[in-house]
Image (cartoon, rainbow, N blue to C red; front, side, top):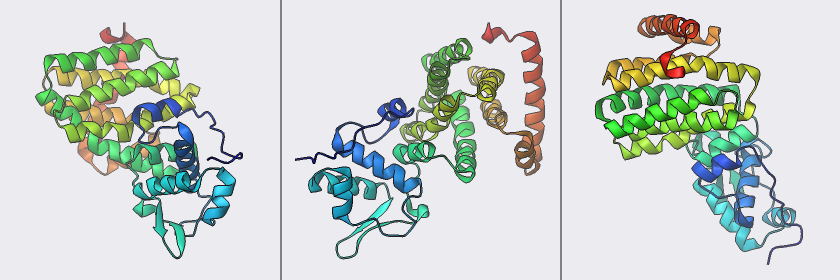
Length: 284
């Protein structure tokens, strides 16, 4: 039986995201313990490559049965966070060994305050995946699949200023693109990058909301290229969309590495500026 000092589940802005994209449900003491200890490990409470507190001490702290606790530790071990050793106890693994693409691990980064390095690496991953997905959607997507991308875009236009609804529409837009690649492995990778979209919704600052409004023109470019079956144009539009979220110094650093990207960003920015002053037809 569970002890009387069992952890009480606490609400998190990411609970809804976990229910849709996470690997471990946040219900029952097993799920509560997995997410509690996962957050503490990712947040740095236990040093990298160092031992966790004694099993008996942690069991007393969280107030669950030994069986529940050990099952939770096996789950964390499967995510690469800990290594269970029979004689020397359980140790936190080096961060390079963590399964960072696991949606739960991604969420724990956000819940404990993502580092700049983590955010930059997530942005870099999106730059690898999203242009490739957009190009394949332009090449392979069916009329029905492209219609779903367009429908999600329309929802984005009508949900500016409503962070949760806009995040759902934004995620639906990218999910529809990944699904239109007709690559089931690539399509499932949307769970890995969706955390960045929901992370913006949780912050929901005026700057983020303005960024969402500004990004509509860039999303429209991606959609238009996919509808036109323009693979190269879709990939380039996806790059411009991602770059539009970078502050100017970071954008300059990225584009300096690739003159082609620099020209594409500049051209895309000019077109986006024109649409913002003329009211883009899709945004009406």
